[in-house]
Length: 108
Image 1 (cartoon, helix red, strand yellow):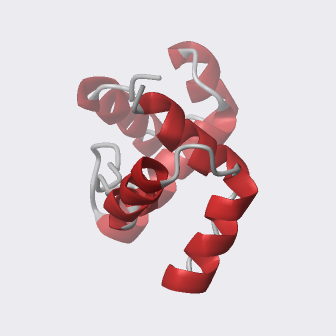
Image 2: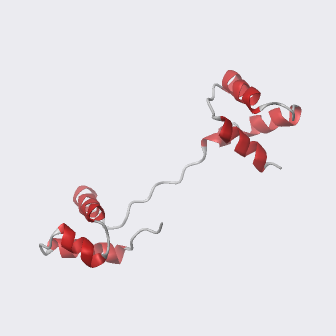
Image 3: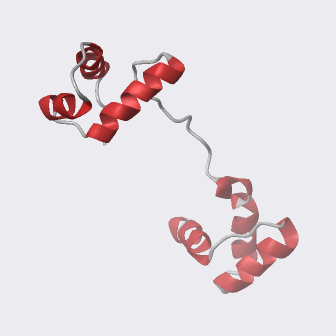
C-alpha cells in the first residue's frame, strides 16, 4: 500500500487547522477518520507532515543461513525437526519449522 502523498497530507492538515471537523475532512479527502487523527498526532508530536517510514532491517535468519546450508549439505536427508533441534543446541536460536523449510526450499 502506497503512503499518502505529502501534498495530500498537507491539505488534510490545513483543512483541520481551519477548524473543520475530523469526520468532515476525512469524507472530503476520502480517508479514514483514524488516519486524520494519526496525521494530526504525528505532526503535533514530531512536527513532521510526511509519512513515517520504517528503517529496513535484515532478516534474522541471515545470521545462521550459512550454518544451515552447511548442515543441509553435510546431511541432505535430515528432517526439519532435527535441523531445528541442532539450531537450538548449537546456536541457541529458536526458529519455527516453516522458516527453516522456506530457507531450504529456496536453495533448490
